[in-house]
Image (cartoon, rainbow, N blue to C red; front, side):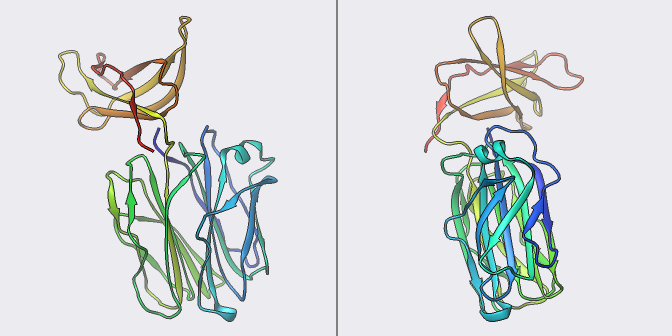
Length: 302
C-alpha cells in the first residue's frame, strides 16, 4: 500500500493565527497529518500540536531558525498519527507557541498508507541568515521506495514568490502579513534514489527549508502481478482490487491499485502472510482481464 495524499494542502495566514480548520479529513486506516508552521517574530517557537483535542508530535530535527530578533524566520514540522486522527472530536488543528507570533502560516495535508511506527523515513534541512544562497537546498532526499512520499517547506523573510525545482511541485504559497512568505512542495515519486529539494525565491532574505520522506508501511509483505488480456498479451492501466480470502466462502476487500502501462501492479503493507489473496482486475471497454501472478507474498525489507 503506497503512501497517498488523500486530502490536499490547506493553510491559514491570518495574523496571530494558532489554528487551522481542515475542510475534510478523509477516511483511512494508516493516516498521517503533516503540518508545517512558519513564522516571523522573536522566539516564536511552536511547542505542541493537536487536532480535535488529540495530540501530535514534532518531527525530529525540527524546528529551523534563520536570523534573530523581530525578523527571525522559523519553520517547524509536525505530524499527527492515525490513533489521534481516529479519536479527534473535530478537524481543528491547534498550535501552541511559547510566544504567539503575529506573522504566521499553518499548512497541513492528510496522507494514508503511512507506517505508524516510523512515519518519517528521512529528514533534511538548511537555512541562511542572509539573502544568499538563492536557491536554497537541503541535502538530497534518498527515496527508498516509490511507495513513499516527499514533502518540503520553506519560509523566507520577504513578501516574494517561490519556485520549487523539479521533480517537486509547488502546492501552496502564502504571504504572511506582507513581510514574509512560506511555500510547500511535494512529490509522489516514480523512482528511487537521490531527489533534489531546491527552492528559489524571487525576492531574497533570510530563509529556512526542510524536507521529509513519508514512509510506507514497513516490515510487511508485498504482492505483485501483471494484468493481461485473454490472449495472454499485456494489458496496462487496469483497475486492480485486492481481496483477502476468509476461508469461509467470503472475501474481505483490502485495498486498490492500478497497473501501469506495462501491466505491473503492486500491493505493499500486507501483514498476514498466511492468508490467501485474490486480485480482481478490469479495464473499461475490455471485458476479459486475466492476472498471471502466482500471488506468492514477498518480504519487504525494513
